[in-house]
Length: 255
Ligand code: CIR
Image 1 (cartoon, rainbow, N blue to C red):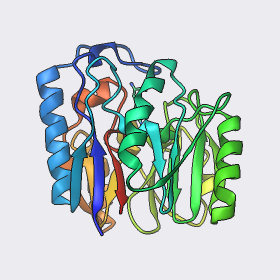
Image 2 (image 1 turned 30 degrees about the horizontal axis):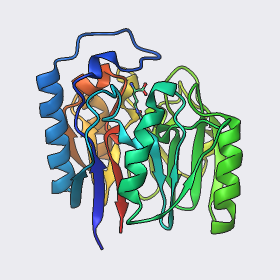
Image 3 (image 1 turned 90 degrees about the vertical axis):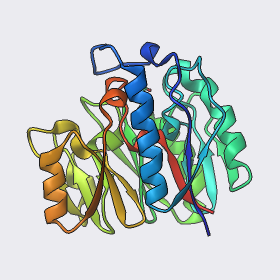
Image 4 (image 1 turned 45 degrees about the vertical axis):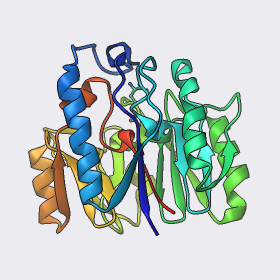
């Protein structure tokens, strides 16, 4: 079995990316590309085979492949991204997933970004956000209930995606920022809070036993290490200016 990580190159047009909660700041493209390459290297070091899918230089958010699909054990859901400008990204991701999974497609009027989907075992938490609506929750239920998945909607406020507010960092450990979600939905898990000085630190990428973690958040990193987790720090300052973080830049799955 191989652990795959699908990625896509940083597009030349990234300066025109969608922004929802952030003010536009100049992105240093050389640094962005170097950080993205180091991220891919960290994925390799964590045991993944990295496959860069076809580049989309004119699609400003195309590096954020996570938003285009939800890859589960036996099926992949191709999303219909909430931002109209991003809908053309999904075709090439579907083509890359086709050798590995049966595909289902989210259809209008539903919209959903993969960044709003956190799978923990058989539970699939779905953020209701500016990008993801209740129709998407209904369509996910229709597609996945019979396969044993439980769909749990969670309201997201003040931040782009569910996974900006909560991600999985260990078998039963979740890293959370309670400002943006009601953690009542996550009772039964061991919750680790981000450091209050680092509100954007809740997006970590667990790959096998390793947590890829943004180098910009040392206080939260210390908390995670104190909890016994193995971290690899990855600089992501330029991708963060495009409102992206570590989970957004890959689709990781076993096949
Ligand atoms: C967007 O607004 O769609 C992009 N600028 C950022 C997407 C980040 N994706 C993610 O958190 N999954």
